[in-house]
Amino acid sequence: MSSGGRLAGRVCLVTGASRGLGKGIALQLSEAGATVYITARQREPLLRAAEEVSARGGRCVPVVCDSSREEEVAALFERLQQAEGGRLDVLVTNAFSGVDAIGAQQGLPFWESPAAFWDQINNAGLRGHYICALW
Image: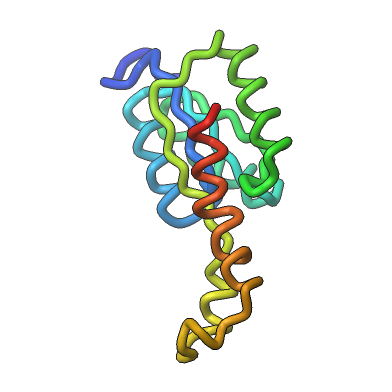
């Protein structure tokens, strides 16, 4: 674990951090010396990302969590409360699971999309961001 860095002693949470933007943000936070909690729905990609994040110098804590499931988000924040005394300096709500749904609807006018399309793109996106912000 890094003893220095401009974010040493800070606790950060990045949801949806097993790949893409979330992983990139987690890597940079770790490089700056932070303790970085990362989440993803699938364990194996999460653990691979955690190895990379840890290698950057900060401490990484991987937590399997589906941001669209309120009970899993509650358990995540309860874990943070216990482990970090409730401290959370940076929250990056990056989880999103609508890419496949958007691809399937590509080229269609929005009014031809079923109502379930809204749920597919917003449950782990917009709703997940809201649930995390409540805690």
